[in-house]
Image (cartoon, rainbow, N blue to C red):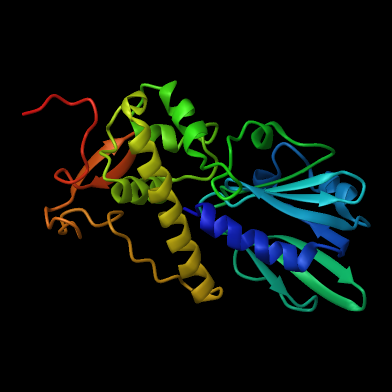
Length: 271
């Protein structure tokens, strides 16, 4: 599942290809990706328009056109973008194609998605899914005082709260798991029981997790990143701090790996 660092890398690729370019072709016959719009509506909105900006909030990318229109992209579970030559044949799992001109240069942007859980939405203005997103961690959203006030309003386990996109946009299972391990906080801890020190540690832990994944993707340069997770996916393996075997629980329907020894559970009774 793509998380914030993956989507940021996609935004950078799209920004390089799209910003300042004019869309000469916009094809997508996959009504699952376009729901509820039609292929004709996509082409009508985009063809002939120049791209002014490519932005990201959480796991969504917003392409802003010169007439104020927008194209929104969500990668879902298996989505991704590829820059190709105009004459290149369709790639495997190609679902959409956008041909572009920038000066004398011509190129083709392809959207690939094997399981078709992604979204492509052309709209004259911002859509609800964008407007309802919480602050973005890479755009000033990890302010300790703001995050503390947000968490104080919830009694949910802190991991569930972190993955709520209206609380904090872009944090998925991997980043939440790694951030909480970095902060030494049990993922089951009630959000409203974290004190100022906990929230400060959590902010630093999330920033570290995001930076680590982003660096791995920059080094991979489009290839498979060499992710070295401290907790995610390491159930039954020794904790890298205290050597206790990492445990597995399910929170909010998602598998969660953590250390039951050095990740302290806030609000639990002492034994």
